[in-house]
Structure formats: structure tokens, C-alpha cells
Length: 194
Image (cartoon, rainbow, N blue to C red; front, side):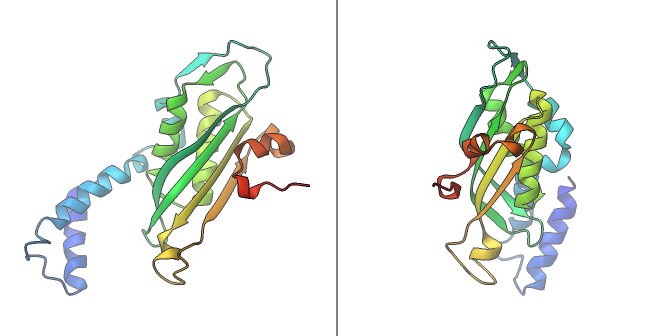
């Protein structure tokens, strides 16, 4: 990431909006913004395959032949919308997969979600990316992911609908055809009873 170029562009933005970049509160802003973007967009440097290798630490499944799903819920992440560079916040990710001989270390699931979110994203693509990375890292075709989150491009500008949330899902393999498996990752308000 070219942090010096980011600094130059942030300086230009400050000038373009009519601010004085030499005033005390803004003197270090270009450098601080460049450092922040380097941190919060770290995942830009990696492909899905890179992330799968980076966090693909697996263990032998002690119960071979078992079709029990591994489920991790309420993983918190944030990201930035590629359309407005606006914060996507209060994001919760639910992940489930069926092991086929290997299981991921639990912390690796959260790390995969975090790193995939550290890109300019669309929530729909983030859901897909996480599912693809989990599938590759755990070597399983059976993965389900659901994400619920708020988008400041909806809550703080434009329509300014502060209570809106966006929910996306991605289902691979057995999760596509089995509603009980899909229910493992869905949020409570998504489940249909009856």
C-alpha cells in the first residue's frame, strides 16, 4: 500500500473541502489516515486463496464419517463499502461447515472473517468470500455463512435510515439443500416458524 500517495491525496481532500491542513488539529491527519487505511484495509493485499493458506491450520477430525456441523456465531467485524468508502459496522458473522476429515482451529474462523472484511467490500461479496475461504481452508464443500450489519451509507447519509440492517447469506454444498443446516447460521429474526 502506497501510504505516501494516500497522505498526498488526503491533503488534497482537506484542501478541496475548504479546510486548512496546516491548522493544529489537521497537521498530522494525512499521515494518521494513511496509517489507519493500511491497517483497516490489510486484507486488500491477499487473495481468498492466500487467506485460506494463512489461516488454514486444521486438525484431524476425531469423528470421521460424522456429518455434524461446526458452528461459530456472533463473530464481529467491520468493513468499508466500496461505493462510498463508508463504514459497514455492527456486523455479525455466523459460520457453519461440515468437516470432511479436517476441522479448523476455532480462532482461525474468526481470523478469516476479520481478514476478508479488511478490504473495500460489498456485504454480499464478503459473505461469499468468507464461505469460499472456509471451504478451501477446511477442504469441505459444505459451508454456510450469514452476515448482519449496518451501513453508514444508509444510516448517516442519503436516506439516513438509522435503524436499517442488511442481512446476506451464502450457502455451499449441503447447506443449499438442507433447511435445518441453513437454520444453523441464520439470525433468529430470519427463521420462519410454522
